Amino acid sequence: MNYYSCCRGNTQTAEEKKLISSVIKKAYNDLGRIKFREVLALIHFILLALLWISRNPGGVGGWGSLFPKG
Image (tube, rainbow, N blue to C red; front, side, top):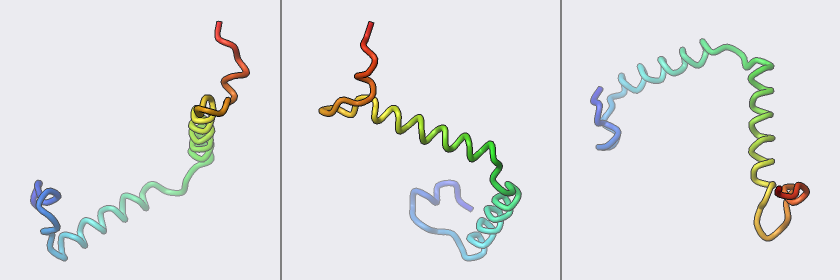
């Protein structure tokens, strides 16, 4: 497999594609089921991102206006 194949287009043979696909599938299956802690981390990340966005959305006062600077 050529290192620069991503820059020149798709130059992979069918055999190389099957090999890459099997390696990815094996790695995915080795991960196992998603754990409860991983779900909680994802929920916390999404909540944090939503709070950052809604703090001061611009034009409309967000929840950040509840806390005066000082």
